[in-house]
Amino acid sequence: MTRREALQRMSAGFGAIGLAGMLGSQTSAATLQPFTARAKRVIFLFMNGGPSHVDTFDPKPALKKYEGQQPGGKLYKMPKTSGFMPSPFEFRRCGQSGVEVSETLPKIGSIIDDCCVIRSMHTDVPNHEPALLMMNTGNNQPIRPSLGSWVQYGLGSENENLPGFVVLRPAPGIVVGPALWSNSFLPAEYQATSVVTADMAVSKLVANVQNPNLSRSQQRREIDFIQRLNHLHADRRNQDFNLEGQIKAMETAYRMQSAAIDTFDISKESVKTREMYGDTPFGRTCLLARRLAEAGVRYTSVYYTSSGNQPWDTHSNHNVGHSKLCADSDQATSALIMDLKQRGLLDDTLVVWTGEFGRTPYAQEDKNKDPGKRGRDHHHTAFCTLLAGGGVRGGLAYGTSDEVGMNAVENKVHVHDLHATILHLLGIDHEKLTYRYAGRDFRLTDVYGKIVNGILA
Image (cartoon, rainbow, N blue to C red; front, side):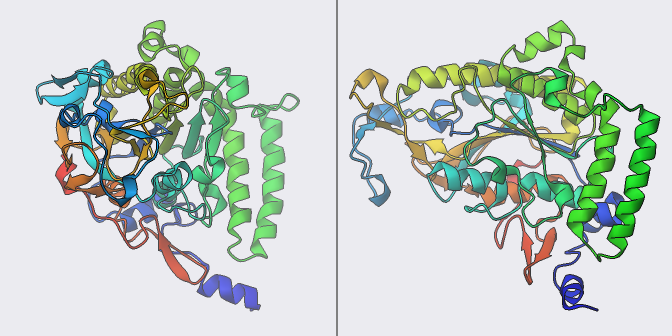
């Protein structure tokens, strides 16, 4: 045995039996699922940029009382703030549950009885890059596998003809980028398939999948020959996960020729359904996410981009920008949840709607000091996350922030807790889903994370 083989076998090998592709998805799922899974799949709607919690799901009437007053505390000595800024939007009690939702999200308000709002979220850093990484990977630095990769590693795929982890982004430019959906040190087969949805033509979404020169039977013979060579190559390289990932990727690519062409084609949906989601980049992408979930894709991330290619980063002219962003997201998000419910998929599909953080309850001055165009800055000590389906209690507002929305104070939920809860709903013990790398066991939640039992149905 060579030194390299010894190290591979003794320290950098299988991890904690989460390697679905090596041991079989049923085996790994049974090992990691000490309790019944409520969700089979996840659709993660990521409002990158950070929606304002005090203008969406966390009403703060006290902001009117303190309007213009400077916030206290060492973190909030901001030279550009003009004091607390109340929300100009009315909050309404919605559904039978009476959960308060901003008038900027009327369609989500109409289905709030199917949703749970966490009002006590918090994260570590109020800067986009580390906060984006924390929400997507559980770490502030670009060194860890993404949540989707961990889910795929633990449970495997429901459909061998499609990737198990798909990232949909209406525009190619996402802050941080591929590190948000990286497999990092997990085997290559758990890397996401990233799709830019700016052009919804199937030939653009899944380019180069169909071979223009060879028939399916000819391709099958060619693939079989290449794979025999690959397996001979693999037999000489013990546990070479990159090579094994490549072998699986070639098989998936072959099978995708028919499955992907059909699944990615949203033109197969009725006009009524397409109109329900809205003819916007985000609307069309959410419709595609539902089709992927229906086809058995385990984890789908949708990164928000508005029609004007604007993220939720409203440093100036907040009230106008926030209204436009909400109108776009509101229609598509509510349509997705309603569509899943009508098709009987919501019970076992977990939908998550969140940003990387919230926005300040106080104002950020416009660069021209125009009081009518004030914005809101990044805010990490209190924000909101919305969940629906997949074993979550509907019609619930969980946790609270203080009277002005500065800090989460009751039933606080850190991003690690959210991740632990998502894995729990999928039937996975977040403390047991580990992978051994560089001499130690790693997990999504590091040494943190508590299941938020209060939101479970």
